[in-house]
Image (cartoon, rainbow, N blue to C red; front, top):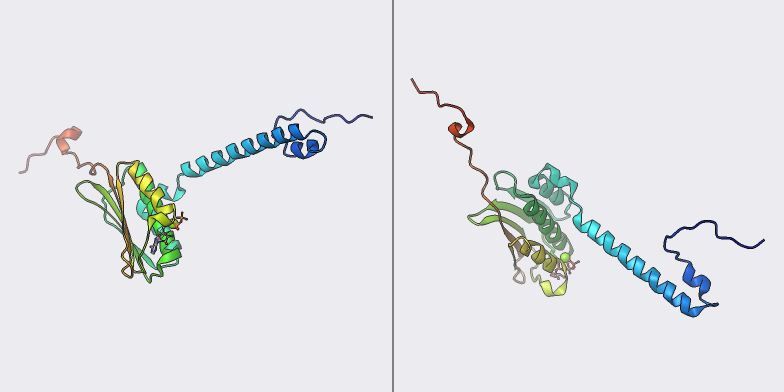
Length: 198
Ligand SMILES: Nc1ncnc2c1ncn2[C@@H]1O[C@H](COP(=O)(O)OP(=O)(O)OP(=O)(O)O)[C@@H](O)[C@H]1O
Ligand SMILES: [Mg+2]
């Protein structure tokens, strides 16, 4: 009895190039190239997915998310959240990624005894600073982490600065524009009348 295909699946057939490699090398080469294109596409989709994932921990606010990062860090880290109210979602997300990468760098390179994370507002927007008391000498030309952060913060019209003199620790500072928290509205604007004082 002749062999018959069992089904008509259109999925990428990873074994196809190998099957035809001896009998028909040209077809095998084309099949291998298709498989490689499909795999590259899948990888890119996975990367996009990973970039877009919103850390669930941010649902409880940036302060809680940063505390979670600090708790996970192997270098004792304190968080000081001095910004009143929530920051806009994209700013909180960027602040989270800046802190995550900066603390990963502290663990990997700083040989620090402590680190701090500080979030505050100034006249222009939100400022996030991650500082350590380690060896310093951070250099964004040696990796892609700090440059990636600069791109992410830059996309929000913000700036990323790194101060890292040798032997004197490192400060990673991101500043991102964001509106001031809304002032409480006067009672009149909410439709109430002011009760005259006796
Ligand atoms: N807190 C730090 N203390 C001392 N050195 C640092 C610190 N942060 C970064 N560095 C140095 O700066 C370099 C660049 O850091 P960056 O995060 O850009 O890249 P990376 O960590 O080497 O690689 P990647 O982040 O792409 O995995 C590091 O390789 C390290 O030598
Ligand atoms: Mg890094």
